[in-house]
Amino acid sequence: MRRIIVYFIVYFIVYFLFTVLIFAKLEAQNIEGQVVQYSDKQGIPFATVAVDGSAVGVVCDFEGKFLLEIPGSMVSKKISVSCVGYKTKFFELKQFLNKSDIIFELDAENVGIEEVVVEEKSLLAYSVIKMLSASISENYPNMAYNYEFSGTEELKFSGAKDKTTDFYLELSDSKGYKRMNPLADYQTIGYNIKSVTRNYEVNNLNGGVLNLDDIIETDLVRYRSNVTDVNQLHLFNFEIKKDTKYLNLPAWELEFFALIPDFKSTGISSCEKYSGKLIVLKNNHELVYAEIFSISSAHSGLTENLFADNNSLFTDLLSVETHRTVRYAKHNSKYVPSEIIVEQTFKYSKQNQLQPISRKIKLLLKNYTTTNPKIFQTRTFFIL
Image (tube, rainbow, N blue to C red; front, side, top):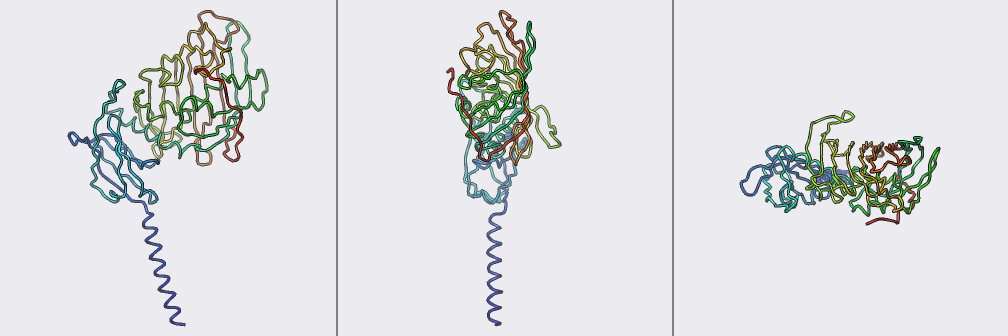
């Protein structure tokens, strides 16, 4: 009996030590060091050090110094070191674990004809946008989903009675918040007008629901061929205006504008101006609020994008000024747009009393689900 007890005690000790070793390996580990220029070994302010393919990362301080905590489950991954104006480098992470004197050297690069001269005060802003982009798949829906919105559209006319439309909108996305191109963004979004309470003419989905297409571009996180696309950072100027708080959470307030406001940088046809404001939380780099202001000659009628029905073109439309706002709220661990507002003012070469002079669309999120989402008809007609 005593031998059995001894065996049991030995077994328990061995099991305990083995468990401790296993959990020790899974414990978070730190790496600490500095990112410098290869040429003169000077620190690079606001460079980004991150675990490749994840949202785990940190922005360096003004001297390029950093301290990054690595979850135990990620120690076998690579680490990326990057900054605007420098070539990104990748390293095997495990060789740096629990080291405090790491030096990462980056080479400067030329970005060609679209080169952007970035001031030091803007470097942090670019790093924040890069971390925001890297964390989208973790912080926003990354699978098929449904949104349900209650909506109101107000149209004002110069010589006709103003018109207000109330409706209930279902929106489906078969892919989730994944990196795509402008055309794919539209091809994976489906609409369904679930109910209408007054003054509504149902548009042909195949031809494009013009009033609703602009909503896609308002959701800057979903419509990633824009300021949240790291491949397009050189097309914009970013600047952090101030540290702030959003719902009592520490955040950055950034301003941006397109250096050359064309379709490539904005997704808007005949765009003449594109600027806005972003609020990004500091802890996990979530975009929680955005404002976008644009001016375009809007050759595709009452929508700013190219994907419109030919029958809706207004040849005498001179310009459209659009102001968009979107607020994001957390639902089931993911951030989703809780409120979207699109306000537009139209200017014509020849004013027709039946043509609206302004429009306001407001959507409030009523339901969000990823459980057996319904996929609605997507658009099949595009002008390219």
